[in-house]
Length: 155
Image (cartoon, rainbow, N blue to C red; front, side, top):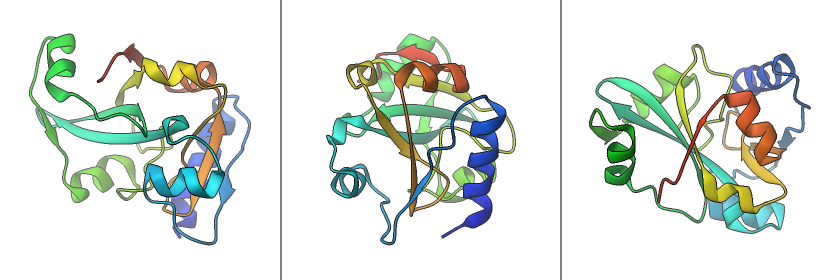
């Protein structure tokens, strides 16, 4: 567990006017499948926080756990830059969180964020809360509001 990363996410939720719904699990939930089992929900309601390297800058894509991001499609929609998979060190540097526990917020600096429109299909979403043992619940509308994400079809 990383209590500092989780505390950062909790502070960010409250600062954004959202409710602190962080849940801590005894066993790690580092993947959408593991989180869906622990939460007894559809894997499509898990919001993966995926960090990519967009020409040296971080790009956060909030995608459904049931989706595979089509980076070529996203590149075309953005109209500029090359999207590459980010290294674990790159992710940690820009988010303060390790791969598998990255949250949509609580980072040292604002990161450009895209929100997968398919997540609208779920009344309640779950997202990582800063480490492998924590998640928080939120609605699509509230997630969109607190992240100021650009809504896109990412798959």
